[in-house]
Image (cartoon, rainbow, N blue to C red):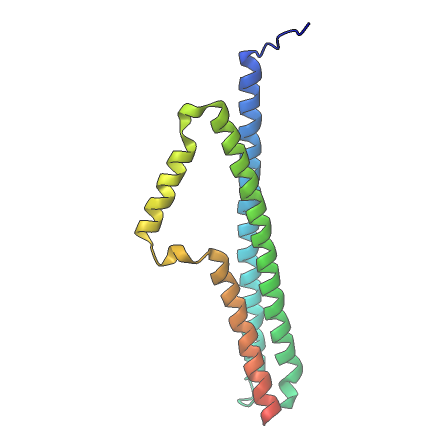
Length: 161
């Protein structure tokens, strides 16, 4: 003989509270990775600018600058890799947060969270059709690739001269 399971209103309220707390925690982690990505990129830009200043200080690029040029390439590569790693973590936390939103909507279907989010996404694409095609990490990555390419260009200049 099976006993019916009784779900109390308090249990549902507690579950909603837990889901909202977990959602908020995941979004805080996502924001944290965005801040870290921006901070690391700023440091990479400053270090790269300093290296470029040292490389061009004597108004010539030669074999004496080789170590700094190689270091510039390494700094750019590190910036690219760490940026992509933070993007990966950001996506993980956003996926988790979306899972909690789906569960909240399952418990409270009248909230229509998915519909609201989809309408906002479509409106955003209509307002920014060109920018909507590329993800933000593409721009962050491009910044570091430019530093790498600048280093490679300087390296080739040293090698070919």
